[in-house]
Length: 615
Image 1 (cartoon, rainbow, N blue to C red):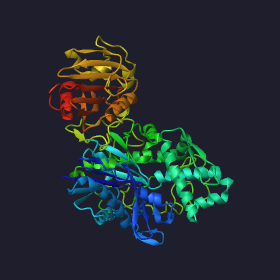
Image 2 (cartoon, rainbow, N blue to C red; image 1 turned 30 degrees about the horizontal axis):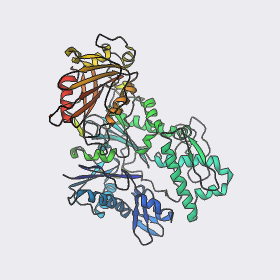
Image 3 (tube, rainbow, N blue to C red; image 1 turned 90 degrees about the horizontal axis):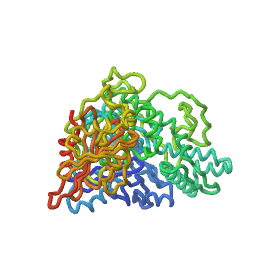
Image 4 (tube, rainbow, N blue to C red; image 1 turned 180 degrees about the vertical axis):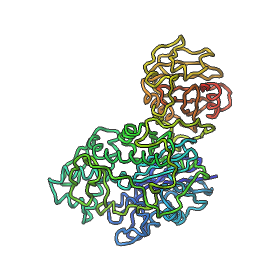
């Protein structure tokens, strides 16, 4: 069955085709969700729309999805139906996919959407897809359900920092959405706006009239200058995820400005704290213990996002390498029986209580986007209408999300702030999942949650005890490594090693024991200096997989964790972690002459039968 999943996002659109992976629609895995209306009435989309925007910015809309509740968009002197704009984006996707189908037809098209959307908004997407010429069965899929489908059978929270809004959903082990919430004034575009205001406080005094033209463009040249500056700010925001500072080229008469990562983090910190507070309150309303928090959306690349979640919630979130493509990838493997759609549009959106001001608020730069006085912190990301130009106002209406007193079970054991230790979850069984190969799937298990969720007890060494445990037996095992190895050392063939070795990877340092098992299988056990170090090393190995892979959870010897397996040309690798412990293992299988092609499932079977420590 040929299945196409399309994530039409506020900023970018991603498509994934079964048996192919992420589709290169517009020169890359993501296509800008932009439209430009030519004078002859034809619509340009994606990067071509961005290029044409310089000709006449009034005919350009960077984010048509933001206007889902409107009937039309004003582009130039014409009123374009919003459905036509969305259909043009879907049509561009279909054009790219048709070339890959080679005459075959699509059986099913899965269209992702925010979990809080009711039938009216969903029907607009379905209508736009039909208008674009998409045939086959159209299936709406909540974004949170798509992400959860990559996680196996476990309760989780989805932290979605999109371009337009911040959304959070808590799902049970069957991927049913139990509770959700949203902040309409926290999104990637709001971060861009905060940067714009920050620069304005720095340079506007040099030419107040020139800055006002950027804030309220009138002429075509003004609009072009504003578009160029917004693009510079977007790129600066992305670069600051990797660099300590960047230069922003400014339109005349202003000189270039240097922005540091510290300045960006000061601008957004208070808003990110609000997102974690909403995450906490949504978990309380859901009444379940999430085992993971998955980060979705390009803005999650900011290191501060994961840092604040770890500080305020006590979880090391799962941060996929490509958060922009995870929704479309997950939609491919969604169990349709697990899809739950919001039945109404008119329920009030959940809004968290306003934050008490605890610090002076810097005055807003002159312009129509004021700093919200209800939000603590010096320079918060704020709500308000965008100035005219490339980011017109018209955010989603305040409908479509569950109320605070919605029909969710409340766990009486959860009260106050996010608890330091959640109730222990029962072991998960039979949740092995196949993920399609590189370029087509995002491995979403790399950010294992920290020691706060680990099993603990008087008979089990803690993470700190494992780290400080240097006493080794004759084979090189510490007490903690022996716990991870289970009965493997009993078969002999284990000895100390200077470092862990895996083809194509740098040497991994730590306390290492290498064991030869049988039939070409070998396993290396590694004790690192921290839980994060073990997780990062395991994640690096998993990211090197270039073929289809298998993932699943495991439990044994009082430990729990998960593993990821892949094979290529008769050689297999399986990396497994121990949740909340600074150690991991690498199982390898060397190629045998004239042997049948090794499968990832075979690696998983061998691990579960012969390597996984028993209960």
